[in-house]
Image 1 (cartoon, helix red, strand yellow):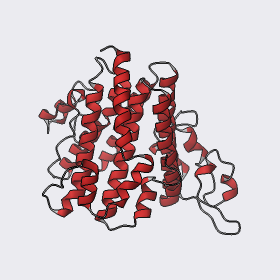
Image 2 (cartoon, one colour):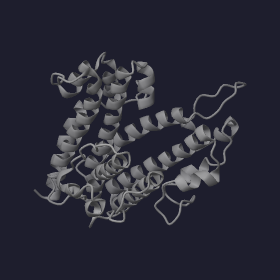
Image 3 (cartoon, one colour):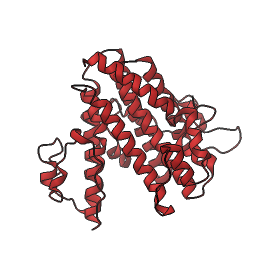
Image 4 (cartoon, one colour):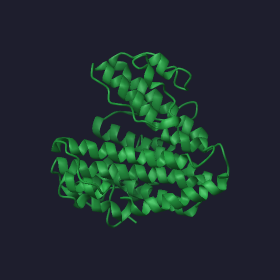
Length: 340
């Protein structure tokens, strides 16, 4: 099958899958489940497995992820040579595997089985616990030893930074309206994540600008206001956190928590994040439909399914912890008013 034929097939398949997915208004159904068993049957359409109740929430998350990865791999395999970006999106799980293995080993715990992405894997897991052989010949071969415990966060950040730079390079490798839309989505997504990270560090940890800068993701030589992923973050580094007047004309004022004249106000990162999630979900679905039968279809399918996994996780935790349904939906970025 040639590339255009493969793209048409993939668009048809992903369209059908998304009609059944728990995204948009359909995500609200997850939060109507009264038990983990009911949630399981809603998602998988099979009887709940015979495992202790306390293990079902973990099984729901794990099996939902496994189902998604298998679906995505089958779609990738339709192409004789998938685009680099579509492959690199999947390889986020390779980085997660490496982090998990290192963390478990450093704490003398038995590591969980790595998430299997089939022929798209880059690490030799049979070599574990020899990390040098595991990462050998990969773009992450510099990670050739288990770092000291207090150094693990620095190594994890370096992994994430490199993965992001690889994805950004792949996203900008080809031209065309569809590819530019995907690149713009990725840029906006990570720029907003950086911005949220700044807000959290300032609001919850009272960190100053100099302490925050080393924690920002970037794709240029340094993290500065000219970097595609840093501009939004730099815009909020110096604003007063409790002065609404400094924020009311902000580029993203639509994300701000409500302000009432005469009542003390402070920016709420969780509120901002919820609004960003809703808008991001809507934008991913918009790009999916606007650029049918292109790489944008599968790239946005990937992003939309990540949002679904987040909702499934939130619904399972809501039931497990007997939390408030509306609060769980709020945290997951599910809104009956805004979801479409």
